Picture: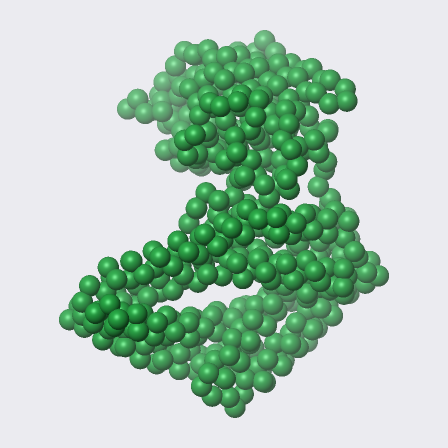
Length: 504
C-alpha cells in the first residue's frame, strides 16, 4: 500500500435551520465568485475501540467512498479550527483498518481492537469560493447527513449543517471573517467538532475536570495528562518521521518522569516507581536519535563559522556520510522500542495511573498548600547540586555541572506544574532557573561536541581525511565552555545564590 499523505484542514461547522438557503459570501474575505453547487454522495464508515479511545481524544478514523478524496482518513486535532488529516487510498480489505493506520494510533488504542462504530451518509452540495483571479479561497458545503451508530442500542439521526473549509493557501485569519458573515446570515456555530461526535457524543467519556478550588492532586494530575497527551501526539510524529518529533517525545517522557518523582508525595511515588523506571528506559532508547540530531546540527553550524581557508578537505561530505549512518542506527533503535511490547505496557501503565491514580492524603490539600513542599524540595536539590560542583575541575566539573543542569530542569518542570496556582510569585524564580538550565545545556553540548569531534578525528584519520579543522573546532569548544561557566556563575548569583523564593 502507498505511503500515507498528510494535509492540514482549517474549517468550522455551523447549524442551519431546515429550509434555509445557503448564505452568499461574495464580498467576504476576498471572495469574488461563489460557484453553483456540485453534488457529492459521501459514504463513510468510522472505526474506534469499543471504549471510544480515539473519539475521546478528538481523533477520527474513517473509510470514505465518494468525493475527490475517497480513501482512509485519520484526523488528528491540532487546534479548535485545525486538524491534520493523514490519508491512504482505498484498497485491501474494506472492513479492516490498514496496518499503517493501526500502528499510528497505537499509543491511543493501547492494543485494543478497532471496530466499526458508526456509518454516515452525506449528500453534500459544495460551493467553491474564489477570488478575482479565480484562485480558490474556501469551500462552503451544505451537508445533509444521515447517521447510524451501533452498540447496545442502535441510534439513527438526520441533520443538516454547513461547513466552511479554507483552501490550504488561504490565510487562517480569514476564518473569522467568514464566521461573522455566516452569523449575520443566520448560521450558528456547531457545538460539535465533527459529524461523528454529533452522532455518538454522549457515549464518549468526558475528560476529568478540576473544580473551582483545585486540590494539589488535581493540579498534578492535570500536568501528567498534558504531558501524556504530548507524548502520544509525538509518538505519531516519530512514526511519520516528522522533524523534531523525537525531541518532543523525549521531552514529554522526561517531564512525565520528573513529575512522578517531584510530586511523589501527592501521587504515591512507591506505586509509580516502576513506571518512572520504564520512562527512564524509554528516554534512553530515544537518546541516540536526538543526540545525533543535535550533534550534527551544532557541528555544521560551527563549521560554517570557520574561514573557508581553514576548512581542509571534503569535511561536509564526510559529515553527511557519518551522521547518515548514525541517524539510521538511532532510528532503528527508536522504532524497535516503539513497536515493542515493553513500550505498549508502559503506555498502559501510564493510562492506568491517570485513570485510577494512587493519591496520598496530601493530594487532598488545597493546591497552594499542597504544592509548596515539592517545589521547595526541588529548589533545595538544585542548591545542593551547585554546592557539590564548587571546587571541581576538568571532567569532574563537567559531570557536576551536568548534574546541576538536570536539577535545574527538574526545578523548572516543578515550577511549570505549580505555575497555574502561584502565578507571578513563581515567574521570576522560574525564569532564572531556566536561564541556568539553558546555559548549562549549552555547556553540555560543548562536552558532547568535543567527544564527537574526537571520535570524528580518529575515524577520519583512519579514512585518510585531513582532520585539522576538527582540532580547531575542539579548541573553540573548550574556549566556549569556559565562557559558559563564567556566564553560569553570574546567573547563579542572580538566582539569589541558590536561595529559594521567600514564599516557599
